[in-house]
Length: 195
Image (cartoon, rainbow, N blue to C red; front, side, top):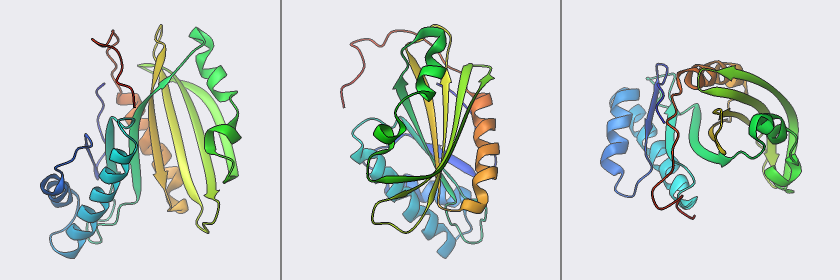
């Protein structure tokens, strides 16, 4: 899997010895000093969250549009999802039980979905505004799932932001990343790792 990021994004593979790398990413995305510390702290938290997901997240990225603050405005988790159904896999994916997928303790405030295409395959686009039980803050999610022809799995780009005024811009940049996606299909020696 290969893809490119628009400006103000940086990505990495989640790992354990990460403090030095978090500072490097912060140095790339934010001004030195307090802004860089804000970014490094956020990158560390995103990395730790991915590690708690026990191998599900293959790649992470953060978007820092304002170098002077270093605030992370959006997060990207790249995962692989099972995609049964052959050519109808995108439609089957969109027809799933959303309540089951998002959890019964999550309130779906708004949901919109459609299909499209990118060079790597068919694409499902899901924009979701949700609020978890016990939390006041609404979060915006964008799920871009790329279904390559003939594959039983799809590449899933999951964007998250609490900055609802930036949802449209996150969607625009997410589409740019999906358009750049290149996938290599084949068997994994020894099979897929069990999480």
